[in-house]
Length: 113
Length: 112
Image (cartoon, rainbow over all chains, first blue to last red; front, side, top):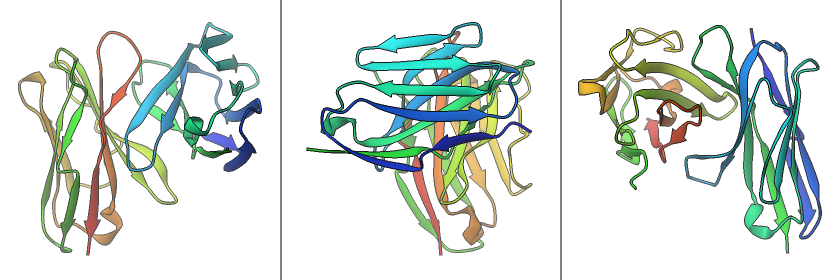
């Protein structure tokens, strides 16, 4: 059974710092991995999607890497801003034709002005 | 364009009552998903619809839960004889040929 773990559960840093969020998964047979952002009381917003054949994806100040063989992904946020405060979730899409996403518990990020 | 919409945004019901939750996916999206997000359980898959294919119901927690998708568009998630453990935020997502899932704002269900 695929399990996804995110560390840390919560993180608080001052504005302007670069930071890394971690995601690990137990079964390397994934189709892709996505990072989402969730604001309080809101739905999820997709940030980056990495296909299983890719090593990383970048969007603005965000960079996500994927090491499928070791079951790890990281989300790097450069020059953090208070508006980056949210819960960040990673999710893997299983291989073998399965369509569902398996989510981690999330990292609650607070950027202090 | 319009995103995924869900209604109601909040629902409070009494234990034992039936509830219906609605999801309007992005127009033209062929795939639709329901997830449940509860404290301590994270976000868990419930059911998946793709076009006219039989839905993947493998995530439904009990036979009190059912869902349908009419005309390949709007979907309704029905929970019969609600229990307190059904209290959660129910999220709907849709996607087309790409892999990115677009999520609605969710319905917060509280069972008293």
